[in-house]
Image (cartoon, rainbow, N blue to C red; front, side):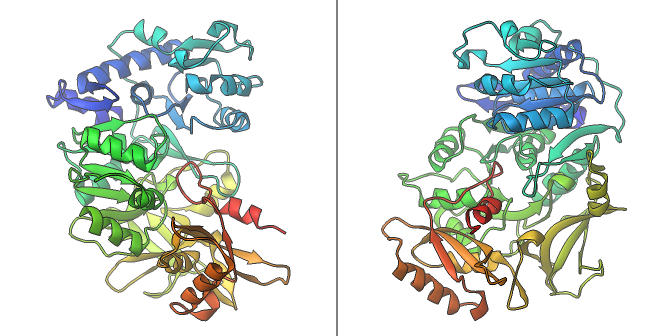
Length: 521
Protein backbone atom coordinates (compact mmCIF):
# COMPACT_ATOMS: atom_id res chain seq x y z
CA UNK A 1 0.00 0.00 0.00
CA UNK A 2 2.87 2.39 0.80
CA UNK A 3 4.48 1.68 -2.58
CA UNK A 4 1.18 2.16 -4.41
CA UNK A 5 0.46 5.57 -2.89
CA UNK A 6 3.88 7.12 -2.27
CA UNK A 7 7.08 5.34 -3.23
CA UNK A 8 6.13 4.67 -6.86
CA UNK A 9 6.52 8.42 -7.43
CA UNK A 10 10.26 8.13 -6.86
CA UNK A 11 10.55 5.32 -9.39
CA UNK A 12 8.55 7.39 -11.90
CA UNK A 13 10.87 10.38 -11.71
CA UNK A 14 8.89 12.68 -9.39
CA UNK A 15 11.41 12.84 -6.55
CA UNK A 16 11.77 16.60 -6.95
CA UNK A 17 8.10 17.38 -7.60
CA UNK A 18 6.28 19.43 -4.93
CA UNK A 19 3.49 17.28 -3.56
CA UNK A 20 2.66 18.75 -0.15
CA UNK A 21 1.91 22.38 0.74
CA UNK A 22 1.53 23.53 4.34
CA UNK A 23 1.53 27.15 5.51
CA UNK A 24 4.66 28.78 4.05
CA UNK A 25 6.38 25.52 3.17
CA UNK A 26 6.22 23.01 0.36
CA UNK A 27 7.69 19.53 0.22
CA UNK A 28 8.78 17.23 -2.59
CA UNK A 29 8.01 13.54 -3.02
CA UNK A 30 11.65 12.84 -2.22
CA UNK A 31 11.40 14.73 1.06
CA UNK A 32 8.09 13.12 2.05
CA UNK A 33 9.45 9.63 1.31
CA UNK A 34 12.61 10.29 3.31
CA UNK A 35 10.62 11.63 6.28
CA UNK A 36 8.20 8.69 6.07
CA UNK A 37 11.23 6.36 6.18
CA UNK A 38 12.65 8.16 9.21
CA UNK A 39 9.27 8.01 10.95
CA UNK A 40 8.85 4.32 10.14
CA UNK A 41 12.29 3.58 11.57
CA UNK A 42 11.52 5.59 14.71
CA UNK A 43 8.27 3.67 15.22
CA UNK A 44 10.12 0.38 14.78
CA UNK A 45 12.70 1.44 17.35
CA UNK A 46 9.85 2.10 19.80
CA UNK A 47 8.66 -1.49 19.40
CA UNK A 48 5.99 -1.10 16.73
CA UNK A 49 6.06 -4.18 14.52
CA UNK A 50 4.00 -5.77 11.76
CA UNK A 51 0.28 -5.94 12.69
CA UNK A 52 0.67 -3.69 15.77
CA UNK A 53 -1.70 -0.72 15.88
CA UNK A 54 -0.51 2.89 15.93
CA UNK A 55 -2.97 5.60 17.02
CA UNK A 56 -2.74 8.88 15.11
CA UNK A 57 -4.39 11.92 16.71
CA UNK A 58 -3.03 14.80 14.66
CA UNK A 59 -4.43 17.83 12.84
CA UNK A 60 -3.70 18.10 9.13
CA UNK A 61 0.06 18.68 8.98
CA UNK A 62 3.16 17.15 7.37
CA UNK A 63 3.76 14.90 10.41
CA UNK A 64 0.40 13.24 9.78
CA UNK A 65 1.59 12.34 6.27
CA UNK A 66 4.98 11.10 7.48
CA UNK A 67 3.39 8.96 10.18
CA UNK A 68 0.75 7.51 7.87
CA UNK A 69 3.25 6.36 5.27
CA UNK A 70 5.96 5.45 7.78
CA UNK A 71 3.58 3.16 9.66
CA UNK A 72 2.38 1.61 6.42
CA UNK A 73 5.98 1.11 5.27
CA UNK A 74 6.78 -1.06 8.31
CA UNK A 75 3.54 -3.06 8.13
CA UNK A 76 1.89 -1.50 11.19
CA UNK A 77 -1.89 -1.03 11.32
CA UNK A 78 -3.09 2.57 11.16
CA UNK A 79 -5.89 3.88 13.36
CA UNK A 80 -6.78 7.58 13.01
CA UNK A 81 -8.95 9.66 15.35
CA UNK A 82 -10.05 13.24 15.81
CA UNK A 83 -7.35 15.31 17.57
CA UNK A 84 -9.98 17.32 19.49
CA UNK A 85 -11.75 14.78 21.69
CA UNK A 86 -12.49 14.59 25.42
CA UNK A 87 -10.41 12.37 27.73
CA UNK A 88 -13.02 9.59 27.87
CA UNK A 89 -12.91 9.14 24.09
CA UNK A 90 -9.14 8.69 24.04
CA UNK A 91 -9.43 6.21 26.89
CA UNK A 92 -11.86 4.24 24.74
CA UNK A 93 -9.68 4.34 21.62
CA UNK A 94 -6.52 3.32 23.49
CA UNK A 95 -8.29 0.36 25.07
CA UNK A 96 -10.15 -0.63 21.88
CA UNK A 97 -7.20 -0.43 19.49
CA UNK A 98 -4.57 -1.68 21.96
CA UNK A 99 -2.20 0.68 20.20
CA UNK A 100 1.44 0.26 21.24
CA UNK A 101 2.44 3.72 20.00
CA UNK A 102 0.45 6.95 19.65
CA UNK A 103 1.42 10.02 17.64
CA UNK A 104 -0.42 13.06 18.94
CA UNK A 105 -0.60 16.83 18.68
CA UNK A 106 1.02 18.84 21.47
CA UNK A 107 -2.22 20.80 21.77
CA UNK A 108 -4.01 17.79 23.24
CA UNK A 109 -1.17 16.70 25.51
CA UNK A 110 -2.86 17.39 28.89
CA UNK A 111 -6.04 15.52 27.93
CA UNK A 112 -4.18 12.63 26.32
CA UNK A 113 -1.85 12.27 29.31
CA UNK A 114 -4.87 11.81 31.57
CA UNK A 115 -6.33 9.28 29.12
CA UNK A 116 -3.19 7.13 29.30
CA UNK A 117 -3.20 6.77 33.08
CA UNK A 118 -4.79 3.31 32.99
CA UNK A 119 -3.73 2.25 29.49
CA UNK A 120 -2.63 -1.39 29.47
CA UNK A 121 -1.09 -1.54 26.00
CA UNK A 122 0.46 1.82 25.13
CA UNK A 123 4.26 1.89 25.34
CA UNK A 124 5.25 5.19 23.73
CA UNK A 125 3.80 8.55 22.68
CA UNK A 126 5.36 10.83 20.06
CA UNK A 127 4.26 14.43 20.53
CA UNK A 128 4.24 16.77 17.52
CA UNK A 129 4.94 20.47 18.10
CA UNK A 130 5.49 20.23 21.82
CA UNK A 131 6.04 24.01 21.94
CA UNK A 132 2.27 24.47 21.44
CA UNK A 133 1.84 23.65 25.14
CA UNK A 134 2.91 25.73 28.11
CA UNK A 135 4.64 22.89 29.89
CA UNK A 136 5.80 23.01 33.48
CA UNK A 137 8.01 19.98 33.09
CA UNK A 138 9.87 17.83 30.64
CA UNK A 139 7.89 15.21 28.72
CA UNK A 140 9.63 12.46 30.64
CA UNK A 141 8.15 13.82 33.88
CA UNK A 142 4.52 13.63 32.83
CA UNK A 143 2.27 12.26 35.56
CA UNK A 144 0.86 9.33 33.68
CA UNK A 145 1.33 5.61 33.29
CA UNK A 146 4.97 4.94 34.30
CA UNK A 147 5.27 2.30 31.58
CA UNK A 148 4.86 4.86 28.79
CA UNK A 149 7.75 6.71 27.16
CA UNK A 150 6.98 10.29 26.06
CA UNK A 151 9.08 11.81 23.29
CA UNK A 152 9.04 14.89 21.08
CA UNK A 153 8.27 13.61 17.57
CA UNK A 154 11.26 15.26 15.93
CA UNK A 155 13.88 13.73 18.26
CA UNK A 156 13.67 10.01 17.33
CA UNK A 157 12.67 10.87 13.76
CA UNK A 158 15.69 13.13 13.24
CA UNK A 159 17.96 10.46 14.71
CA UNK A 160 16.66 7.75 12.36
CA UNK A 161 17.90 6.78 8.91
CA UNK A 162 16.10 8.07 5.83
CA UNK A 163 16.34 4.57 4.35
CA UNK A 164 13.72 2.14 5.64
CA UNK A 165 13.47 -1.57 4.85
CA UNK A 166 9.79 -2.14 3.95
CA UNK A 167 7.84 -4.89 5.69
CA UNK A 168 7.18 -7.94 3.55
CA UNK A 169 3.43 -7.39 3.53
CA UNK A 170 0.89 -9.36 1.51
CA UNK A 171 -2.11 -7.85 -0.28
CA UNK A 172 -4.34 -9.53 2.31
CA UNK A 173 -2.47 -8.32 5.40
CA UNK A 174 -4.38 -5.96 7.70
CA UNK A 175 -3.36 -2.37 6.95
CA UNK A 176 -5.78 0.13 8.49
CA UNK A 177 -8.91 0.48 10.58
CA UNK A 178 -11.45 3.08 9.49
CA UNK A 179 -13.85 4.13 12.22
CA UNK A 180 -17.59 4.37 11.73
CA UNK A 181 -19.21 7.63 12.79
CA UNK A 182 -20.50 6.12 16.04
CA UNK A 183 -24.03 7.49 15.67
CA UNK A 184 -25.43 4.57 17.68
CA UNK A 185 -22.74 4.06 20.34
CA UNK A 186 -18.96 3.92 20.30
CA UNK A 187 -17.30 4.00 16.88
CA UNK A 188 -16.34 0.60 15.49
CA UNK A 189 -13.16 -0.12 13.57
CA UNK A 190 -13.77 -1.43 10.04
CA UNK A 191 -10.72 -3.60 9.39
CA UNK A 192 -9.19 -3.09 5.93
CA UNK A 193 -6.51 -5.03 4.09
CA UNK A 194 -3.49 -3.79 2.11
CA UNK A 195 -5.30 -4.01 -1.23
CA UNK A 196 -8.59 -2.36 -0.24
CA UNK A 197 -7.59 1.29 -0.52
CA UNK A 198 -5.65 0.89 -3.81
CA UNK A 199 -8.63 -0.97 -5.30
CA UNK A 200 -11.04 1.91 -4.71
CA UNK A 201 -8.43 4.41 -5.88
CA UNK A 202 -8.13 2.59 -9.20
CA UNK A 203 -11.82 2.27 -9.95
CA UNK A 204 -13.17 5.46 -8.36
CA UNK A 205 -10.46 8.13 -8.32
CA UNK A 206 -8.62 7.22 -11.51
CA UNK A 207 -11.22 5.67 -13.83
CA UNK A 208 -14.49 7.27 -12.72
CA UNK A 209 -13.49 10.76 -11.59
CA UNK A 210 -10.23 11.21 -13.47
CA UNK A 211 -7.87 12.56 -10.81
CA UNK A 212 -4.50 13.24 -12.48
CA UNK A 213 -0.95 14.41 -11.81
CA UNK A 214 -1.84 18.04 -12.52
CA UNK A 215 -4.37 18.15 -9.70
CA UNK A 216 -3.87 19.90 -6.37
CA UNK A 217 -6.43 19.10 -3.69
CA UNK A 218 -7.87 20.91 -0.66
CA UNK A 219 -10.36 19.47 1.82
CA UNK A 220 -13.00 20.64 4.27
CA UNK A 221 -12.99 17.35 6.27
CA UNK A 222 -9.73 16.51 8.01
CA UNK A 223 -7.36 13.65 7.17
CA UNK A 224 -8.41 11.43 10.10
CA UNK A 225 -11.75 10.97 8.31
CA UNK A 226 -11.42 8.32 5.57
CA UNK A 227 -13.31 10.49 3.08
CA UNK A 228 -10.52 13.10 3.25
CA UNK A 229 -7.72 10.54 3.66
CA UNK A 230 -8.66 9.38 0.19
CA UNK A 231 -9.49 12.58 -1.66
CA UNK A 232 -6.92 14.86 -0.03
CA UNK A 233 -3.91 12.58 0.34
CA UNK A 234 -4.08 9.13 -1.20
CA UNK A 235 -5.78 9.94 -4.51
CA UNK A 236 -3.47 12.81 -5.50
CA UNK A 237 -0.37 10.89 -4.36
CA UNK A 238 -1.45 7.80 -6.31
CA UNK A 239 -1.35 9.77 -9.58
CA UNK A 240 1.60 12.03 -8.82
CA UNK A 241 -0.48 15.09 -7.91
CA UNK A 242 -0.32 17.33 -4.84
CA UNK A 243 -2.27 18.36 -1.77
CA UNK A 244 -2.47 21.48 0.41
CA UNK A 245 -3.14 21.01 4.13
CA UNK A 246 -4.19 23.40 6.88
CA UNK A 247 -4.46 22.52 10.56
CA UNK A 248 -7.00 25.18 11.48
CA UNK A 249 -10.71 24.50 11.79
CA UNK A 250 -12.61 24.51 8.49
CA UNK A 251 -14.75 27.62 8.15
CA UNK A 252 -16.10 29.32 5.00
CA UNK A 253 -13.63 32.17 5.48
CA UNK A 254 -10.70 29.77 5.92
CA UNK A 255 -11.67 27.80 2.82
CA UNK A 256 -11.83 30.95 0.70
CA UNK A 257 -8.40 31.95 2.05
CA UNK A 258 -6.86 28.52 1.34
CA UNK A 259 -8.34 28.35 -2.17
CA UNK A 260 -7.02 31.82 -2.98
CA UNK A 261 -3.57 30.90 -1.67
CA UNK A 262 -3.00 27.46 -3.22
CA UNK A 263 -5.32 27.59 -6.25
CA UNK A 264 -6.46 23.94 -5.97
CA UNK A 265 -8.15 22.10 -8.81
CA UNK A 266 -10.24 19.81 -6.57
CA UNK A 267 -12.16 20.68 -3.40
CA UNK A 268 -13.44 17.99 -1.03
CA UNK A 269 -16.47 19.33 0.78
CA UNK A 270 -19.77 18.51 2.50
CA UNK A 271 -23.25 20.01 2.07
CA UNK A 272 -22.99 21.98 5.31
CA UNK A 273 -19.87 23.79 4.08
CA UNK A 274 -21.36 24.38 0.63
CA UNK A 275 -24.24 26.12 2.37
CA UNK A 276 -21.88 28.01 4.66
CA UNK A 277 -19.67 29.24 1.83
CA UNK A 278 -22.67 30.37 -0.18
CA UNK A 279 -23.89 32.44 2.75
CA UNK A 280 -20.54 33.76 4.00
CA UNK A 281 -19.78 37.45 3.75
CA UNK A 282 -16.71 37.30 1.52
CA UNK A 283 -15.70 39.89 -1.04
CA UNK A 284 -15.56 38.46 -4.56
CA UNK A 285 -14.34 34.92 -3.82
CA UNK A 286 -12.44 33.44 -6.75
CA UNK A 287 -12.97 29.70 -7.24
CA UNK A 288 -11.94 29.68 -10.89
CA UNK A 289 -9.02 27.29 -10.24
CA UNK A 290 -11.42 24.49 -9.27
CA UNK A 291 -12.35 21.99 -11.94
CA UNK A 292 -14.78 20.13 -9.64
CA UNK A 293 -15.83 19.44 -6.04
CA UNK A 294 -16.53 16.17 -4.27
CA UNK A 295 -19.50 16.12 -1.92
CA UNK A 296 -20.34 13.26 0.43
CA UNK A 297 -21.29 12.56 4.04
CA UNK A 298 -24.89 13.61 3.47
CA UNK A 299 -26.99 13.93 0.33
CA UNK A 300 -26.56 17.30 -1.37
CA UNK A 301 -29.92 19.08 -1.72
CA UNK A 302 -30.76 20.15 -5.27
CA UNK A 303 -31.15 23.74 -4.07
CA UNK A 304 -27.57 23.88 -2.78
CA UNK A 305 -26.16 22.09 -5.81
CA UNK A 306 -27.78 24.56 -8.19
CA UNK A 307 -26.90 27.68 -6.15
CA UNK A 308 -23.25 26.62 -5.96
CA UNK A 309 -23.05 25.91 -9.69
CA UNK A 310 -24.87 29.12 -10.61
CA UNK A 311 -22.64 31.28 -8.41
CA UNK A 312 -19.23 29.72 -9.01
CA UNK A 313 -19.61 27.72 -12.23
CA UNK A 314 -18.05 24.69 -10.52
CA UNK A 315 -19.48 21.19 -10.91
CA UNK A 316 -20.07 19.07 -7.81
CA UNK A 317 -19.97 15.27 -7.87
CA UNK A 318 -22.22 14.08 -5.07
CA UNK A 319 -21.66 10.48 -4.02
CA UNK A 320 -21.79 8.02 -1.16
CA UNK A 321 -19.14 5.88 0.48
CA UNK A 322 -18.55 4.39 3.90
CA UNK A 323 -15.89 3.29 6.35
CA UNK A 324 -16.94 -0.27 5.58
CA UNK A 325 -16.04 0.12 1.87
CA UNK A 326 -13.26 2.69 2.43
CA UNK A 327 -14.59 5.25 -0.03
CA UNK A 328 -17.16 6.23 -2.62
CA UNK A 329 -18.93 3.50 -4.61
CA UNK A 330 -21.93 5.39 -6.05
CA UNK A 331 -21.38 8.83 -7.53
CA UNK A 332 -22.13 11.52 -10.05
CA UNK A 333 -19.18 12.01 -12.38
CA UNK A 334 -17.77 14.07 -15.27
CA UNK A 335 -20.41 14.63 -17.98
CA UNK A 336 -22.87 12.53 -15.98
CA UNK A 337 -24.55 14.49 -13.18
CA UNK A 338 -28.18 14.08 -12.21
CA UNK A 339 -28.92 16.71 -9.53
CA UNK A 340 -30.64 15.31 -6.46
CA UNK A 341 -29.41 11.78 -7.12
CA UNK A 342 -26.17 10.24 -5.89
CA UNK A 343 -25.34 9.15 -9.41
CA UNK A 344 -24.58 5.67 -10.71
CA UNK A 345 -22.60 2.72 -9.41
CA UNK A 346 -18.82 2.95 -9.75
CA UNK A 347 -17.41 0.34 -12.13
CA UNK A 348 -15.96 -2.46 -10.01
CA UNK A 349 -18.83 -2.39 -7.53
CA UNK A 350 -22.29 -3.96 -7.59
CA UNK A 351 -25.40 -2.88 -5.71
CA UNK A 352 -28.73 -4.35 -4.61
CA UNK A 353 -31.69 -2.71 -2.94
CA UNK A 354 -33.46 -5.19 -0.68
CA UNK A 355 -36.49 -5.36 1.61
CA UNK A 356 -36.51 -6.37 5.29
CA UNK A 357 -36.40 -10.04 4.31
CA UNK A 358 -33.32 -9.50 2.13
CA UNK A 359 -35.18 -9.86 -1.18
CA UNK A 360 -34.34 -7.46 -4.00
CA UNK A 361 -37.08 -4.89 -4.60
CA UNK A 362 -38.39 -3.70 -7.96
CA UNK A 363 -36.86 -0.72 -9.75
CA UNK A 364 -38.20 2.49 -8.22
CA UNK A 365 -39.05 0.92 -4.85
CA UNK A 366 -37.27 1.98 -1.69
CA UNK A 367 -35.21 -0.46 0.35
CA UNK A 368 -31.88 -1.03 2.07
CA UNK A 369 -28.74 -0.71 -0.04
CA UNK A 370 -26.29 -3.59 -0.21
CA UNK A 371 -22.94 -3.10 -1.90
CA UNK A 372 -20.26 -5.46 -3.20
CA UNK A 373 -16.67 -4.67 -4.19
CA UNK A 374 -13.08 -5.61 -3.41
CA UNK A 375 -12.52 -2.71 -1.01
CA UNK A 376 -14.97 -4.13 1.56
CA UNK A 377 -13.67 -4.41 5.12
CA UNK A 378 -12.90 -7.80 6.60
CA UNK A 379 -15.02 -7.18 9.72
CA UNK A 380 -15.62 -4.82 12.62
CA UNK A 381 -12.96 -5.30 15.26
CA UNK A 382 -14.24 -7.09 18.37
CA UNK A 383 -17.83 -7.07 17.10
CA UNK A 384 -18.52 -10.54 15.69
CA UNK A 385 -22.32 -10.40 15.72
CA UNK A 386 -22.49 -6.95 14.12
CA UNK A 387 -19.90 -8.08 11.56
CA UNK A 388 -22.10 -11.00 10.54
CA UNK A 389 -25.09 -8.70 10.15
CA UNK A 390 -23.18 -6.24 7.96
CA UNK A 391 -20.71 -8.40 6.03
CA UNK A 392 -22.48 -11.43 4.55
CA UNK A 393 -20.39 -13.20 1.92
CA UNK A 394 -19.41 -10.62 -0.71
CA UNK A 395 -22.15 -8.21 0.30
CA UNK A 396 -22.01 -5.30 2.74
CA UNK A 397 -25.38 -4.09 4.09
CA UNK A 398 -25.11 -0.33 4.44
CA UNK A 399 -28.11 0.68 6.53
CA UNK A 400 -28.96 3.37 3.95
CA UNK A 401 -32.36 3.65 2.30
CA UNK A 402 -32.32 4.08 -1.50
CA UNK A 403 -34.26 3.55 -4.65
CA UNK A 404 -32.76 3.20 -8.12
CA UNK A 405 -34.52 4.58 -11.19
CA UNK A 406 -34.80 2.91 -14.59
CA UNK A 407 -31.70 4.80 -15.82
CA UNK A 408 -29.51 3.41 -13.03
CA UNK A 409 -29.33 6.54 -10.86
CA UNK A 410 -29.49 6.00 -7.10
CA UNK A 411 -31.63 8.22 -4.89
CA UNK A 412 -30.94 8.53 -1.17
CA UNK A 413 -33.75 8.58 1.39
CA UNK A 414 -31.79 8.53 4.64
CA UNK A 415 -30.36 6.17 7.19
CA UNK A 416 -32.61 3.24 8.08
CA UNK A 417 -32.49 4.31 11.74
CA UNK A 418 -33.66 7.82 10.80
CA UNK A 419 -36.69 6.82 8.73
CA UNK A 420 -40.05 7.98 10.11
CA UNK A 421 -43.28 6.03 9.98
CA UNK A 422 -46.00 8.65 9.75
CA UNK A 423 -49.64 7.63 9.26
CA UNK A 424 -48.43 4.10 8.56
CA UNK A 425 -46.13 5.23 5.72
CA UNK A 426 -42.33 5.49 5.80
CA UNK A 427 -41.11 9.06 5.31
CA UNK A 428 -37.53 10.12 4.55
CA UNK A 429 -36.42 13.13 6.62
CA UNK A 430 -34.25 14.27 3.71
CA UNK A 431 -37.36 14.82 1.56
CA UNK A 432 -38.88 17.15 4.15
CA UNK A 433 -35.56 18.92 4.69
CA UNK A 434 -35.09 19.55 0.97
CA UNK A 435 -38.53 21.12 0.86
CA UNK A 436 -37.98 23.33 3.93
CA UNK A 437 -34.65 24.54 2.51
CA UNK A 438 -36.52 26.09 -0.40
CA UNK A 439 -38.21 28.57 1.97
CA UNK A 440 -36.59 32.00 1.65
CA UNK A 441 -36.14 32.40 5.43
CA UNK A 442 -34.37 29.07 6.02
CA UNK A 443 -30.57 28.80 6.14
CA UNK A 444 -30.29 25.24 7.52
CA UNK A 445 -32.66 22.61 8.81
CA UNK A 446 -32.86 19.05 10.11
CA UNK A 447 -35.88 16.79 10.62
CA UNK A 448 -36.31 14.03 13.20
CA UNK A 449 -39.20 11.87 14.37
CA UNK A 450 -40.88 13.04 17.58
CA UNK A 451 -43.42 11.38 19.87
CA UNK A 452 -45.26 13.97 21.95
CA UNK A 453 -46.59 11.30 24.30
CA UNK A 454 -49.44 9.81 22.31
CA UNK A 455 -47.30 6.99 20.89
CA UNK A 456 -47.41 8.46 17.38
CA UNK A 457 -44.25 9.61 15.64
CA UNK A 458 -44.48 12.73 13.51
CA UNK A 459 -41.90 15.01 11.87
CA UNK A 460 -40.23 17.73 13.91
CA UNK A 461 -37.98 20.31 12.26
CA UNK A 462 -35.04 22.28 13.65
CA UNK A 463 -34.49 25.46 11.66
CA UNK A 464 -31.72 28.04 11.46
CA UNK A 465 -33.08 31.27 9.95
CA UNK A 466 -31.24 33.50 7.49
CA UNK A 467 -30.04 36.96 8.40
CA UNK A 468 -32.82 39.47 7.91
CA UNK A 469 -35.51 37.07 9.12
CA UNK A 470 -36.78 36.63 12.66
CA UNK A 471 -37.77 33.39 14.33
CA UNK A 472 -41.41 33.62 15.35
CA UNK A 473 -44.67 31.70 15.60
CA UNK A 474 -45.74 33.37 12.37
CA UNK A 475 -42.62 32.13 10.55
CA UNK A 476 -43.11 28.61 11.94
CA UNK A 477 -46.68 28.60 10.66
CA UNK A 478 -45.51 29.94 7.31
CA UNK A 479 -42.93 27.16 6.94
CA UNK A 480 -45.53 24.51 7.77
CA UNK A 481 -47.91 25.89 5.14
CA UNK A 482 -45.05 26.12 2.66
CA UNK A 483 -44.29 22.40 3.11
CA UNK A 484 -47.96 21.42 2.94
CA UNK A 485 -48.25 23.12 -0.43
CA UNK A 486 -45.34 21.20 -1.95
CA UNK A 487 -45.28 17.62 -0.63
CA UNK A 488 -47.82 15.17 0.77
CA UNK A 489 -49.80 16.74 3.60
CA UNK A 490 -48.98 14.09 6.21
CA UNK A 491 -45.24 14.83 5.82
CA UNK A 492 -45.30 18.42 7.06
CA UNK A 493 -43.44 19.11 10.36
CA UNK A 494 -45.87 19.31 13.27
CA UNK A 495 -43.29 21.17 15.38
CA UNK A 496 -40.62 23.66 14.42
CA UNK A 497 -37.82 24.63 16.82
CA UNK A 498 -35.66 27.59 15.87
CA UNK A 499 -32.02 27.19 16.91
CA UNK A 500 -28.85 29.22 16.40
CA UNK A 501 -26.83 26.41 14.81
CA UNK A 502 -27.36 22.75 13.99
CA UNK A 503 -25.10 20.40 16.01
CA UNK A 504 -22.55 18.59 13.83
CA UNK A 505 -20.37 15.56 14.46
CA UNK A 506 -16.65 15.41 13.64
CA UNK A 507 -17.47 14.30 10.06
CA UNK A 508 -19.45 17.48 9.41
CA UNK A 509 -22.80 15.67 9.44
CA UNK A 510 -25.84 16.90 11.35
CA UNK A 511 -25.84 15.14 14.72
CA UNK A 512 -29.39 13.81 14.72
CA UNK A 513 -28.81 11.81 17.87
CA UNK A 514 -28.14 15.01 19.79
CA UNK A 515 -31.28 16.61 18.34
CA UNK A 516 -33.31 13.58 19.39
CA UNK A 517 -31.83 13.74 22.90
CA UNK A 518 -32.70 17.44 23.11
CA UNK A 519 -36.28 16.64 22.16
CA UNK A 520 -36.91 14.01 24.84
CA UNK A 521 -39.74 15.03 27.19
